[in-house]
Length: 117
Image 1 (spheres, rainbow, N blue to C red):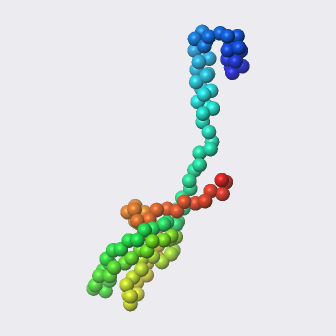
Image 2: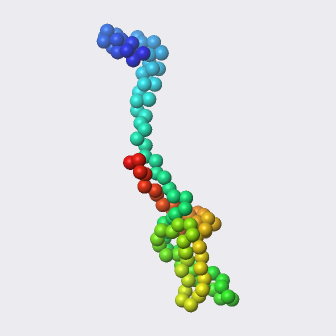
Image 3: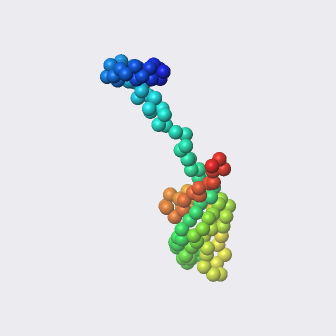
């Protein structure tokens, strides 16, 4: 059809005289040619996050302690939430904490390097 269209133009015939099928083909051709596969897809880790500082109070042994999430990168299984001095309290980043912190906006998933680029 492209060849027919080019012949039509070469013969100096007006585009107004072209039938509907050729006009439709031109529109379809322009749409297809304007699409590109160069769209970069950004992949994100499902196991690692980058966090900002966050503090909250936690009941512990009949008292409240302030737990602190320091800014940085954390992955599942890492120890998070620093405790005040002389308090033996450890928290491991599990899927529940990861979901909680990302939904609250304190952490976001890390972008992965795309090896194909």
